[in-house]
Amino acid sequence: MASHSDDRAYIPASTSDDREGPVSPSKEKDHAEGTEAALPSLNVFQLVGITYFSAAGGPFGFEEAIGSGGGSAALLGLVFLPFFWSIPLALMTAEFATMMPEAGGHIIWVDKALGPYFGTLNAAFSAFTNAFDNALYPVMFVDYLEEALFAYMKKDFSDAWDVGLRVAVIVLCVILNIKGADLVGDASMLFGVLVLSPFIVMTFMGLGPALDDLDGLPGAVVDTEKNDYRWGAFAAVMLWNTSGFDNAGTCAAEVANPGKTYPRALAISVVLVMASYALPTLVGIYYIPDMDEWEDGVFVDVGEEVAGPWLRNWLGLAGVVSSLGLMCTLLCTASRMLEGMAHTGALPPIFGKLHPKYGTPWVSIVITGVTTLALSVLPFSALAEADMLFYNLSNILKFVALVKFRVTHPEMARPYKVPLNTLGMALYFSLPCLLCGASIFLFSWSSIIAGVAVTMLVSLIYWLKGGNDVGLKKKEHGSEISLVDHSS
Image (cartoon, rainbow, N blue to C red; front, side, top):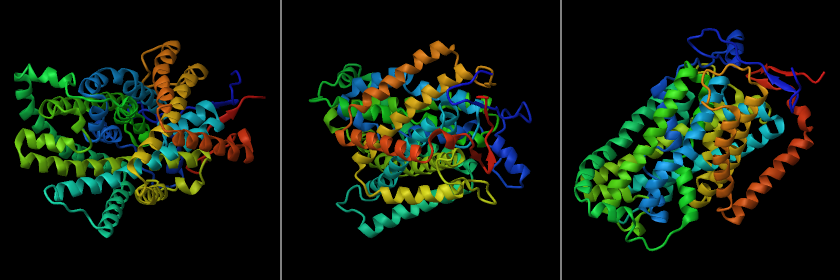
């Protein structure tokens, strides 16, 4: 075989049963050593639950897109943006996850495709992304709980209650995650039903009058009362609310029959996410046509306009559940990324340590929970911007990695393959890469400087540790990854 850029070739995971799909070599090693590793058990609906809460978690958070860009731009964005952003993320995840169903997802994929340097950079970008992203949701949980409990009173939680609630909800999510990804998947399905139920009711009750008033609805959609536009904020919010499908890949080692499960779950998730944004938005802009009133929490006001206080209160409680579901799911995916970083050598092996009973990366889960609590004191806007900056940098590496693997490893079994040849896929994936690059320049200079500083610092540490020599031998769940040197 010809030598590649890092003189390494990935040995595909063996298959113990064609019905099960590829089996993670790390799981086979754990079984041989008597470790009680988690068996692949996530089904389509559990994976849909995890993916949905990784990408959306309900319409909450989408309000600012209407407030900054108007109703017509937001609805048009939901029609066209998936083809240039969400669907490429889902397709990339489906091919990679079925080809290499490893815990850690893209942490492992980028490392094996682009080599240890870019693998280390991707791991660092992902670590920062997860840290900032996870810290958003304890804040949202407390805010929505205040809105639900004190909607008609000028009252807030005391500082002690605020901190106590954040600690309690994080501990709950940590416990659920330690008990297994299948439990997180079940919880995500339940959370999904609880979150979407009031929006379904609001849509059915409000869409009829909106469609009956065909004169009023188009006027609301074309933003006749919109006074100003903030396109930078609009782009950031739209991309943020339609991203996250790649996080489903971090649980690949725990997915049963990934060759069939991933394509189905990701297809369902993309449609579900877009519909759960579009339909409530269409109702909302009819009842509250002044776009300048659209900010976080306005869906609660729409519910009151549609049906009265009872729907308002129901939507307020749904916001609490949405924040809980997002936090629980992202804690799951983030901890698996830390586990993957341990397998590639980017973090100490203890981050890959599995729970003796549940087979989950309990050390990574606990550390992720502690980090989430510590960072939740930062301003919401700063967390969101830093989150998207590092996420976009990581996404560019993921798309390049899949194209690279198509070129260097065409012989590898791919239970699911993006239905494009290598050149077509490269051209298609260039679109989300351009979106990532362009959106970075919409961020504040402080965020851009932080991104450059992290890249330089990680690069310096990497080369001081020995550069590419560090990546020639890796550890995965205590065993060597099958990377073979062909240079000789």
